Image (cartoon, rainbow, N blue to C red; front, side, top):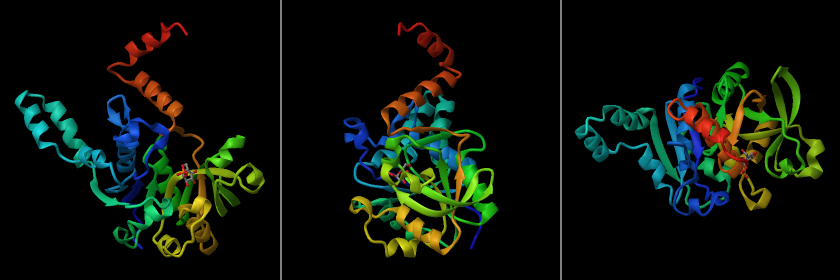
Length: 293
Ligand code: G1P
């Protein structure tokens, strides 16, 4: 098996119902953090971690994502004519950053079903899977951490955080950890999708779709029975994988996490990123200070 992680799979076919009515016609992955969409932050993070190929699992009404990462020759011509070379470079660089591949998931039967759609695109190599609406900030980055942990233990790797509010157990997949391998890495013995508070005592850390997987996940996905809510979950296949070989969990406690499909997290991301911007940060800070709250 080739060892370098060159591919990332991003399922983006979901309807984004938490952000209706906006998501009626615009994909939630295109929500802007000031002037660039959430999905761009994810792709840039992936490229910085060595990814060369971005595989997006799309669906109906997700065309805006494909257009965003394509050339827009008409707009480039227009910008050229106006002498706006910096703007032209800005929009072209978005397309040149990686190789983009799109696969349609025709019906939404779960995260595991989504991943199965790209089976033929993954050779004998490890690959990453991330969600299309999460932004993670920190050093090392989330994907550098996943990459380096995979290489260190030569094992499929899951990103985790401590989450123990009662409602969290209905929101996230949780791992039960076994042996501690280093200060932030454990072996995984069980992986349970949304265990519910009643089963909180059986699990340890919450997971987020931030995985390094290996192609031996595909036969498991193909033979999987529908699980929670009748859906086919990546979680269940990874749970089985952990019975066959070592799977590890790495804690990303040093990272800032914004679930941009959640209104409050989205607002936090816009505010915090806005404050850090060189062009508008200071003006925005003064504006916030003068708000009569
Ligand atoms: C998915 C995963 C779950 C994870 C969550 C947040 O659930 O199946 O394990 O904790 O994303 O990343 P969903 O939000 O699609 O129901």
